[in-house]
Image (cartoon, rainbow, N blue to C red; front, top):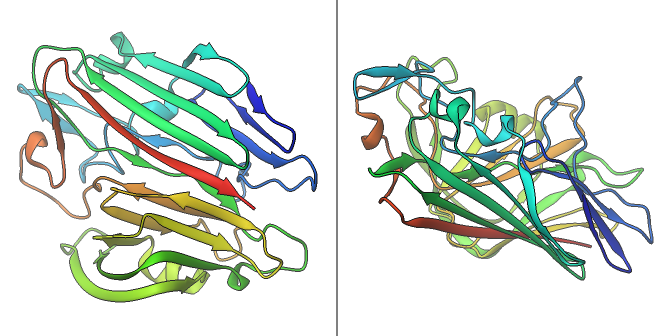
Length: 287
């Protein structure tokens, strides 16, 4: 499945409804991370109904224990294409016996991709089709090639935010022994740094106000993401030589240490009423 105009081509796969590639047909430049077992086989999963996981990897609803893999269900499932024309592609997933065995809430999930010139618009709709409140956390995990051009290095790239940011960074103990804490940070530009990401395992900021963040390198190529209304923004890569970076807008986060709270009461959990729809979106512009 693909969307194509005179300059750009974007290809998609049924598994996870993910972007497979975003290619500049004129230069041949590929912007999306293609996956590699040596680093990270993922590409750009959608995180639903959980970002990360619970600390125990299990949770209890109505006295019954359930478990999901890291980052939830969607990335493991095959979506079906329900609409396509020259500019737009829609894929969807309805809950079934497999999803209900891991997450006991009926839902309809839909992702729509629209290619307009150099920008891919991505819209999500999640509907609670059950008869009780549905708890979930939602996030995105797109991976981009970094560096993009020969002769460039990862450290040559910067992340430029559209506003001056005065945020809190979620600092956690990767071993899970200690609760996370918050540290204040101020910036409008960050340098891509393997050392900084490795230091924190994943860099996570809370309270991002920028509508956009731009990843760019010394030869003038990069990507610009619209991240408006996402309260968290995470930065991750797999190893200190991995040729990609993940820029991740989130609505919440997984557990960083043991928690003694109901699944409905986990921090930043969205509570979707029966028959209501949660909608959100972002975009990827390439240059």
